[in-house]
Structure formats: structure tokens, C-alpha cells
Amino acid sequence: MSVVSDTVTSHLPAKRKTTPSGWCSFNAVCCHHNGTSQDRRQRGGLISNPDGGVSYHCFNCGFKASWQPGRNLSYKMRRLLTWLGVPDSEISQVALEVLRENEGVEVESQRFVLPEFSEVPLPEDSVNLATCDITSKHQVEVIKYMASRNLFFEDYDFYWSPSLAYRDRLIVPFTHKGKTVGWTARKIRDGKPKYMSEQQPGYVFNMEAQTDSKIFGIVCEGPLDAVHIEAMALLGSEIKDQQAYLVNSLNRRIILVPDRDDAGRKLVEQAIEHEWNVSLPDWHTDVNDISDAVNRYGKIYTLYSIVTAAESSPLKIRLRSKTWFG
Ligand SMILES: [Zn+2]
Image (spheres, rainbow, N blue to C red):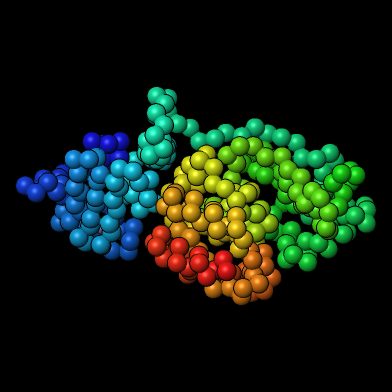
């Protein structure tokens, strides 16, 4: 047995039967989520393997989900758990235990909780650019920069600070559950550092834009890329474990869109480990990230090209990487 098969079997419908070959059948829980009428003929089947692996197959709508030891919890398996009525917190806990087992780390006895973030102030005298008075030419330059990057006040609450260190920077607050928990301030012209940031470990940018109406969770690297298409951002080119838990807690299909550079290439391998989809859209070769794509094609086409190019097969992702990264 394994934590995954234990969790699945303890949430199966009460009315079920087991065949001599080991399949447990019951009314499928997937069909109406997949546009098929509800199963009343016990066409959902589950089989547990002696090694702890578990496979679910619906003979009504065709939905399949499985887990084998050594693999992480796939989004399909998470969906199945959700449909069986397993609470989100318990699914996150299972995912964590599986991840730790795979990494050979002993599972701690306490329940896993998603990262919490403490409130932090924005840079001194920061004002919301959408509502403040124009008091300085630096502020005008920052607004012009936004316009040049196709960033609009309605996209996000952008800030600006008159203090010397920040006045030629666009301040992007990091929020979580309604609180400001960090920020980044991007320089609007050449010069270092490009970004000045206050960031807490495990933070994922723009989780709050991932409303229930979204079918996918798109993940990219930079916050301004994320703002363009209401995606999440890792704020770097690495997937930290805590970030993965947070993203996976959405229980939906996750699509990574890397930047077109060496760091992005490495990020693709991490996404494969987390069983995320990867999208390497058919963009012009000089389009290196989502901001470039939005400038060239507009938001709607950029989003469309990302979703249609999303790929789950590691083999196909790696093949496409070879040409996409050049
Ligand atoms: Zn079904």
C-alpha cells in the first residue's frame, strides 16, 4: 500500500464490487466533469498494485488517471481525488509525501501546510500609479515605460516611489490573500540592478489572479510577463518545492512557458519532473518571452498560442526544446 492508494481507496463510493481480477468497480465520479452524463452502471474501475501503484479507468467517459511509486502526483490524479471528495489540504499533503518519498527524504509527522507570507511595506512613499497625482517627471517616464511595454493600469496595481533609489523604477507589489508580502521594482532604462526586490521563500506571483473560472494555470518566469496574460510567475528560473506545492494546490492543468534562453531550457526539465505541461509556442525566433509575444501578436493570440502548444509528453517536450531554444 501507499499513501496514494490509501487515500483513493478510503474515499471510494460505498457502493462498489470487486472482480476476481482485482478491479474494484463503482459508479464513476469523472463523467459529468468531462461533459458525459453521469455513470449509473458502475463503469468506473480502480486497481491497486502490490507495489502501491494505483490506476483508475472510466469505461463511460474514458477518463484515466494513475500513479506509480517514484512518480509525482499528476494533475489527472489530483482531479480524480478532488472528484472523490478528498479535501484540497489532504491532496496537497499526499503530493508532498510523495515528493519527499521520491527524494528519499523522510516524511515529517506533522501535517503539511502551504507557505504563509508575512506582510511587508512597499518602498518609502509608494503611490498607486492609477490613482495618484502626477508630481514629477520621473513618474511620467515610468508611465511612458508602461505604455511602451503594453502594461495598463487595469492589468495590475502598479506603484511608484519618489525616493531617489526608486523614482526611475516601476514597482510591482507581490500580494497574497489580500496582503502585500513583497515587491519588485524594475528599472525603466538600462542600468543595474535591473530589479530591486523584496521576496519571501516559496512565493508565487499572481496566485490571486488564478480564479476558479480558469481551466489552466500558466506559469512563467517574470512578473511583467505574468501580468500580461494573468499567469503566475516563479520570479526566477527555478521551481522551488514550496512554489510547486502552491501552484499544484490549484488542482488544475499547469502549463510552463519558459523564457527562450539557457535558464529556460533547464527550467523545462524541472517542469517535466513536476509533471507539468510545457508550452513552446510557434513564435518568431526573435520572440523570447511572453512580453515580446504580446508586443508582436497581442494578448489574445499569445494566450491562444500558449494553450494550443501545451504538451504533456516528456519525449515530445524534449524534442521540441531542441529546435525552440535554438
Ligand atoms: Zn467517467
